Amino acid sequence: MTDQPGESVPVRGASREHREPAPPEPAPDGTRESAPEPALDDPEVAARRREFAALLGEFRRTAVLVPLGDGPGPDGERGLLTADLGGIRFILAFSDEQALARYAQVRGEYRREWTYQTILGARLLDVAVPTAGVPCGVALDCADGENGMVFPPVRGIVPDEAAVDHEEGEAT
Image (cartoon, rainbow, N blue to C red; front, top):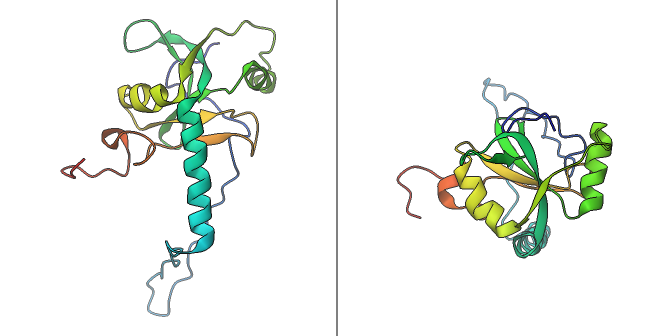
């Protein structure tokens, strides 16, 4: 593959569709009111958090396929295949060879040989993400539309020191 680690790569169908809410309308005094945050004790919010925690736990315990990019990684060897999106680097991981083949098909690169490593999800999140040197998460099965999953670089998913929502001086 011609992608360099960190090179911007379009990730088509990259995970569940997410739409940002429309900005709030200005109040008569010209200020903007913020949208209400969902209550943490809301049963739907709690159910979604439990569902995500289960998915995260399963990912951490599962070995996934991670293609190698053409450029060097931090140790001088070939780096992991990544895509940059919105200022965040994502390591591209696949649940099996069929998921990797779907990605290759979408990219029009299904005829080439794909070299990959098998890496435990926990190792990606706990070791590879912090060594990226930039905000970094993991995109799993990014060619599978809403069946894919994104693990962003936030607390509770990656180590606090690699999380974008970690503030300097905050106890870890």
